[in-house]
Length: 346
Image (cartoon, rainbow, N blue to C red; front, side):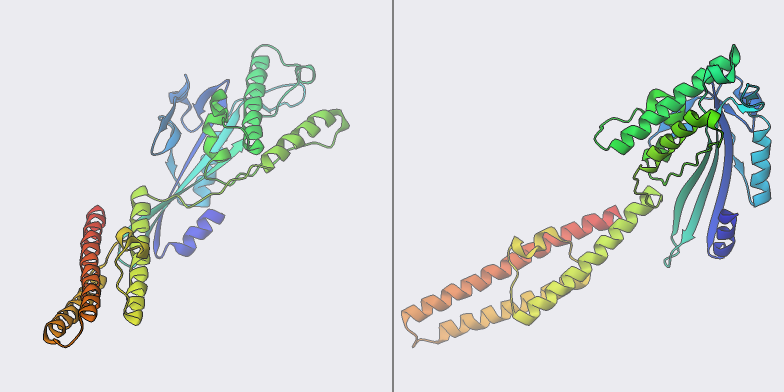
């Protein structure tokens, strides 16, 4: 309801696409709960550089309301693997994951579209079992063994993430941890709800469950907005150009106020990008310097009464100003090339 309430409030200026999928991990096999017939032998787990870990041929349904998404959930729930044990007549024999993917397309002031993607994974973990209490045998015992192994692998991943000193997180130890890789240590916020009963008969199991959830609570992630890589790169360039414009404008103002000629790398010019407006300002400053140099050269030629020492000092000063002007021209040319390269990249 929260998802579709948010969409209703923002649908006037943004476009949304919501897709849902539902699958289970039974005996380390991935089964599509929305299309059981095509996953009789288990679906394949794949990985790509763009979308990360994904399940090949998994059914994904577009939903437009709470009623539709609830209908998908109930349809998949009917196909879940359950079985009888001494502790639960309808015990879950698999881990199930209900995934909701939300894509948002927004338009900026320049009529450019920007796409953001969010994913919500609702995971129902089957509880760990003791054979002495469940009385499991045959297929039920095999199922319990697979459940306990995957929960143990998940616990090892959580411990490695919480520890902070481990360089390796064993996501590949089970299909459950592989699928939940992004949900645990990726660009996400993770919440674990523990189901514990008050009966003293199950005291050890309840305590173990609470400790398990407590470790998950200590995972620290820093999620950021998922957006199209090209949009993100373009936005970064635009922000960098705006920053450079501000910096160059400030530098030009300071140069005019102090009559200072920037001529070395300490001023940061050789490492920054020059905008069109700033190039015009630099050109005007160069012309002013050139005119001043010419006037002083004429004065030097006309003033025959100055001493040799005075003429030498004036000549040295004139050469320094001439060098500064040439350095400014070189800086301006370097910056023009850098700006052209960035504009071509954009």
